[in-house]
Image (cartoon, rainbow, N blue to C red; front, side, top):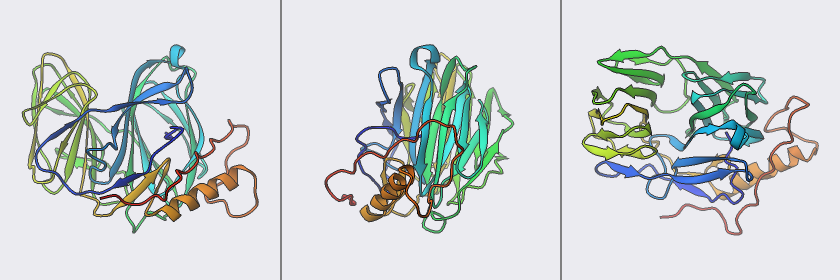
Length: 323
């Protein structure tokens, strides 16, 4: 999915851990015009910009497509990151310039690695009446951020832990492992379903940062109350994660990873290391969609598709690390 804000701000991400458990409130972000979808952006935000290498987390729906028009995100570029699509309800068609076409379905992960550069579009299917899911990005480290683009699909089988169902779509948890390569320091991504009143205790990697996004219901995360749509952050040093559902069933997404150990600049749909890189990515995209000759960093795209999204105007100041 694209970040289609008209005036995206620079995001400088530093993976320094914080002490204790933080509970973060998302902000509402409209994607497009008056009939657009609205998402709840849990990451990045002022208090927290990275969880491991995870740098972006949008949570959306359940949205009635008849009212919102569904998801119609036309072709747009990415560099230096990977996108992870995870749906609860509905279906989305993915098409990219590396030659991959796939349908995103509930309980199946689609991972698109942008690397050096890719462009793609995402459009909800005509049969979809309700759209509900999460879109995540993680930053690629210096060693792989310029790799050729690629794509992976995986449908994890749920594992039963007491009364809970767990689907591990990235990394490893509770004896279940995903085969999906991430080209980054170790990461974790999983969906967890808890019946009302259920308690689940998980052994987690002590060197990881973790985030718990609550999709529905209310849950105690290591004795901290976390309401629906909120994100709980656990810094490195935790060896266990205790989840306790309140009086209703809970669905959540658990993410985690080793601290990235690198500072990045994220602006619009690009991840780079400084202002000049971001400006170069933007200029390359604008040149490609205007039809100019020369190298195609973001690849060729099939004809007959909606017009690509132009890049927003860069802010009038140089993008630079803060603090």
